[in-house]
Image (tube, rainbow, N blue to C red):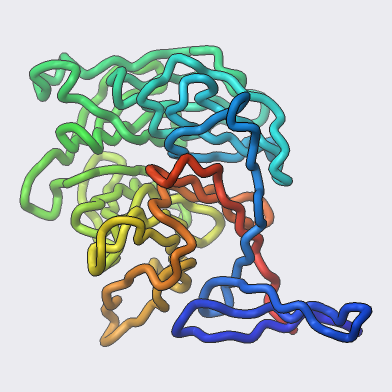
Length: 346
């Protein structure tokens, strides 16, 4: 029986998949990436389209809907949203009105699913159907008196709680987390810029974490290289330190947290991103394109890019088969990369 065998080096994060023998009796060795039993192989040319008909600029974020389609958000106004199947074939596209398209979240169930788009240039959040019909618009929160004008409000991400409440991360503005009900009525806020642990600096991403059955908020503090856990009422509960990683939003699938790392501050800042994966204990287990995670006395040591797989990865989408799709910012207008999960060798 022919089986693929995985060999490689934990230090470099490169493994090799030895495929069954070819007709010439030789074996084909394909690079896979990762550490500690979590390995991935890049699918070459996934999702590459005709740039004249379906161009991209910055590929910011990606989500998967209930039918399995992959939605990509880009700030290219000829087609803000590109919809792929998991094989990389374009199914549809829409959107010409979001010049600052940045954050893309999906919520709801089945046919009732909807998207939330943040626009950093329009200073607004848009709730839309999966085919782009605008259902609700959240303008800048003038009533809070936190902002001198709408330009000071630059939302980067949203998430939806189990009761339908919406949380907005003002990650490029005043660093507040704003709390709305499902109808868009402002209920409160927390965070903001400051020096204490309860404050935020580049609150780039936010998500609901229900892995232990009790929903909490995971918020990115990118400048400080960590995720911060808050209660739904805004009480700081935990800091997950990720030294050496300017992380974007946390993405939860199963027991794991996945995140794009925009850059490695430990080395040259430009073109030094990678993808990090944490387990249910919030410990880093794998870095794709990054250094192997090392813990000393329970403390994670600084991470950095090890392989130039990415320039500035901005988001990770995880499909039902645990394959990864990576969107990149300021990376030469490349289409998303797909990485297939490589099954553990027997």
